[in-house]
Length: 147
Image (tube, rainbow, N blue to C red):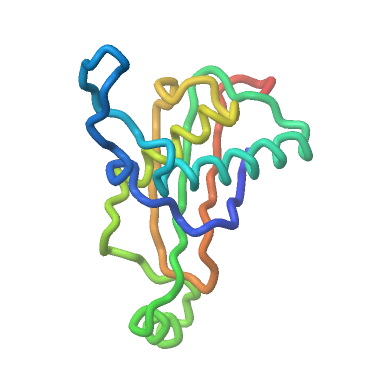
């Protein structure tokens, strides 16, 4: 199953982490509920759930392969490169780091019930490009026939 989230790529998961305290005063590292990453995940969850309902998808279980492609708005330099090569997509090799972006998306897939557990992912492919439209494309491949 493939989802196209017409949202700008998420802020990194690490930016949302803070040292928080439980009610009894113990410290732990957690994600702020009001963070940009949490707000992005909430919007992504709504899009994923509505797309799953519209297409009749159900939660992906078993061993999973996931490809996530992040598309960022062209910069002046990447737009020139795109025109020069004729390719609408130009590789983005600057921040944010792909590993930090992946955590946000995978957490959202679990929260939206698109996948059962991100620990079941046995391969993960991540890409980031400059393009004319900001979006995130997620492709989930399941090993079982019923998904």
